[in-house]
Image 1: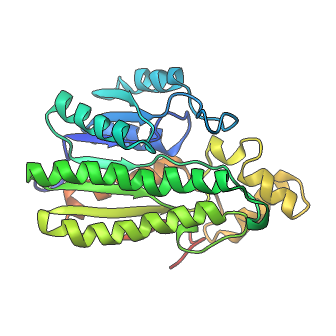
Image 2: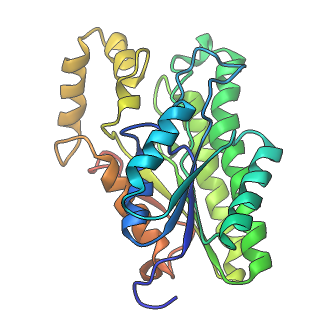
Length: 279
């Protein structure tokens, strides 16, 4: 690749939620000229049946909607499952002949609360999806990249909560800290193979996940004894740029990291927070 040429095949996990960051990333990579494979769970988790996840029909509908932009397909995968992850990467390579970019976007927003009240199941869910899932997907993609010998990109959607721990987000923060640490270690290990490994750290991004019942806005508003809209206003005022971020702004950072323009960037954890996080 040279100049601003884009990689050919990109896989985006956790891309099925309408209005979510994963969909925005897939849309941007399609606009960049990539062939995109979108992955999501597609069914409720048997061990966490109350947690709302995008359905298979939502993933299919997203694929249909984005199909006008370029070649896009979908695959169901539980990123917590080693066999499913390995099969997903093998399927992408078998169908398209290669994989150039992995975007680890799959995540959860459950288990919000103080550590003293947190269940082991909620703790484990966060670590399983956003730490172990990132490890399994990155390992499988890296094995393909190394074997193929043509470089590659691994981009993980971390969080500002992976740089500064926050109350009520212990499990989420721990998983995101782990993802950033893994990013740095992999950058050392895979650099000699021409593979870059980076993380993007979103701040407060205006997505449907933010306002789910029992979600971040509701839980924090309750903690501070105020209405949700008043709490949203309080958060907005604390952001130097004075607004919540948008999913396409995260997608823009991913697009750059996936491009040849970022060929000398690896091991980074880039804030896209409007100044809410500055280290």
